[in-house]
Structures are given as C-alpha cells and as structure tokens.
Image (tube, rainbow, N blue to C red; front, side, top):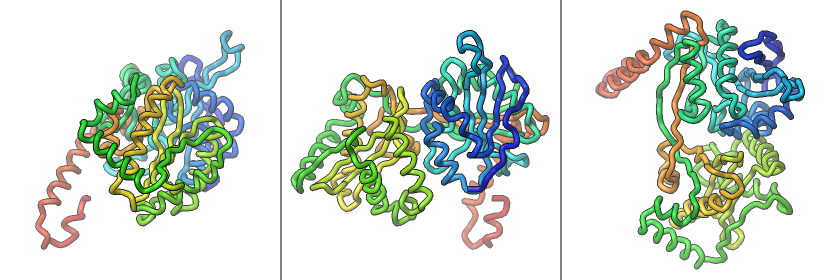
Length: 412
C-alpha cells in the first residue's frame, strides 16, 4: 500500500467538553494507540469487529491500495475517575475525500473494503452524544479539507444513530438521510427449535431433515466446531479457502484465494481473532471432506457472520443451509456466553438469510455537511439530484434499441 506521512498528530484544539482529536495518517504511527484502541473496541456501545485494530490494520495494509486514510482518535481529558489519565472514547477511520457522482465537492467516507460490513465508529458506551459532538466540530474546523462526509449503510437505529441525529439537530447542521433498507439479524431466544419453528414452516423443516438423512446415507456426516486450543488453525483456513475457490466465486475470481492480498488479509484477521477467542468456524463434512464451512467473528454482545462456502457438487442436499441451521442452534447455546445478537452481514435481498433469520437490522445512508455554505447547499440539493438521475435512467430504459449508443449514455 502507499506510504503516508502523519502530518497532524493532534488537532491541539479542545472541541467539546475538553475533547481533543488526534489524527494518524500512517500505519507506522499507530503503535502508541493500539492498547487503548483494542480496549475501546471491547467497550463500545455498538460493537463493530471490523474496526477493531486486529481487523482494520490488516485491511489497511493489504486492501487499501493507494487510498489515503485518516484515523481519528477522540480523547477525553483525564479526571479523578481516571487518575487524570486521558481516555480514548471514540475512533473514526476515514477515507480521505474524493470525487462523487452528483456532488461537485469532494466527499470523505468511513473506511470500507469488500470484507467490511459495518461503518459504525467505535464509541465508548454512554459517551455517544459527547463523542459525536466533538467529531462534528472537528469536521467543521476542517471543513475546507472535509466538506462532505458520506456514511453509506450506517446503522439506522441504536445509540450511535440516535446521538448522530440529535447532535446534528442541536448543532444546526445540514444533512440528508435516505437509502433505507435492512438485512437479516438474529436475536437468539430461549430455545433453538422454537426459533426455527417460527422461522420455517413445518414443510421446510421436514425437508431439511430429509436432506440431512440423505446426506448421512452417503457416508459419515460430521459437524465440527473449531476449538480454542489444540487445533490446526492453518488447516481450517486452507480448507475454507479451497472450498470457496471450488465454487462460483472461484470461477468469477471473487473468492479469497483468487487474490494474494485478500488471502493474506483473511489469514491475518482470522489468526488474530482466534488468539482473542473471537473466531468461530463450523464445518459440515462427509467422510472427512468439507461440504460446507462458515466463519464468524465474535464481539460480545454481538457477532458478525463473515463468510460461508459450500461444495456445489452437493448443492441438491443444501449443505450450506444445513450448516446455517446448526449455526442457529449454536447461537442459542452461546446466548449464556453473552452473544445476544448476530448480524448476517448479508445483502438485504439474500434469500437464505432472510428465510432463516427472523430479525432485521435497519440501515440508512447519511450525507453530512461539515458547515461550509457550499456544502450546506449541496446537501440540500442532493435528494433532487438523486431523483433527476433516477428519472434519467428510467427514460433511458424506454429508449428504442436502434438509437445510437451515445444517446443512451449521455448524462449517465
């Protein structure tokens, strides 16, 4: 990845309630923050495993390419309750501003990559309003460099969203909220079978039982769960990469094993998660040969479904769905261990997740102005630009095929 120089280690200006924001723009300068950053990830009111240091740093190293980033550490001044030691209360990883369709101003974003499924910043539980206010005032102080901020598919409810909306209103900021959608989420109940009875019809449950019996007739059908000790983690990871590459993702070159950087990222993140007790892997095998595998990351009280793969030669037996059913049962067992919900991290239209998981996680997109007059104007005009673009696309779709190609692409 491209080397960056950290030119702004500390803004030096108190922003709100004595808060300061330190900005790190180079991986070489992250070291002093690691311990506090990891502690913050465990204390966040809204967990986001993808912004934990052990998950984000490998992404910046292997997947960021030439994108420039800024890691914002929101620091509360020390007091009697902290022995006068400053406390890290917030963490916002930003991608430096770039051009955006429909907007003449450059737009900053929360850092995201192909394997990052949440853009929720890390904020200490109970400190959300103060941290959000300090962050927005930092944006205002740097409005020439960060005129607009786009939060795509951000959580639409919960403490962070509530703090963001209230702070925007209290500060009189211009913003646009739209693109609402939701994806599958599971909140385990008291009994897994009761949950599955509510999620699936009796006919579907009977069909899955039949498929499981048919698979068992072909050989020794076994469910394995990666243990915290005494296991060859490398063998598990290699088996997962090979299984995923065998299917359509391998053919489309989107599997982890198709890009060296993606595989290194996966191996580093999974190894770090396993060392912290935050990795869960399941395998459904037939005569020792993997039929389906899944990989999840744990961040109590939540968990995040990261990847699933299955052998398409056995697709008629639905091994992936059978493994997901076992995952639901395991989640109910782990409820006593502090896992109260799990984010599917799946596309909103994902059929299997939507059929098996009853709850939904609402998402939305925020476009924020940092306070300049031009940025305020464009935030107000943005929804109208979106509508015009939609009208133009519908118009293009009605054009006859014999028209020249330029008439279809103009303005698109």
